[in-house]
Image (cartoon, rainbow, N blue to C red; front, side, top):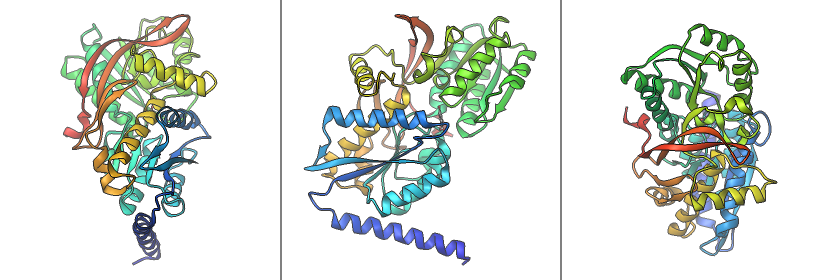
Length: 393
Ligand code: PHB
């Protein structure tokens, strides 16, 4: 065995031992800790801000006590760096004795933490990372966000039925981008459309000009776009307009990540008319969503919730309802108590798939419109109870 393998073996043993000790020594008066690992600083800080807001609101609305014990969120900032995510997850299990690991903004972070969940038998609730394969990385993972293949199908169908024939696909070059690219191409071409170019762009860049030039040269009817939600989509939109692609009649399509509610308000008119498919809009017309939007705004200085806040809110719901069933216990029992949960979310009806531990949900087709002076994703069509199609392969 190399010294690296030895260190890894020792760390794995420590995690297993920690899990055993913490389940033996939990006292009725001890709080139950949920370790929330998210980016709170750096380029993906908005993810942590939204997820924390959602998780915190759930406890504020529904109470933070279960089986006579208080539930505490222990928040850790991984700055979006996977090696940090892994170290923090390990520390949360060993030192803070958390019952649940949660959060995980980006796919590489979820991948990095998965072995810690498996070794320590700690349930890991993925509230955001959205590559299809995330849930396959540990039997302790339950996901309350979405998957890219799940949300991409509806916009591919919309394009094929609305006179869009030729598309240039543009995605960020990492796992969720590849998931989006593959799903769009497969479904759109199956319905007679053509993807004439598939461009992959750096995850973090302020310069989309070379890619937009290539896209324009291909003279498509539309661009299909996936970028991680946040500021980069706003920068892309601005450059899309500056280079005259909108004037050239090229439609912008994508997953809802590109018109995320967190930044849509600041995007300006260039975003008007953008058609996307996604599982959540702040404009979703339900009483529960209106209450959710008002609750997030009130507790966070007017912040509009995005799909990430909903992932945090529903993730906390799944944890709390699971803990009620297990009487505060974690481990495999808690994972089992999360499987199959079915409830109304601010996004609409959802279920945790008992087989895959992934979320089953409605996916909406939406158009950016001005409502009461502000830009919103207005839902006009939907697919019901969509499972992640990535799992079927
Ligand atoms: C991911 O890393 O899985 C991810 C990040 C941002 C998104 C969607 C997915 O908007």
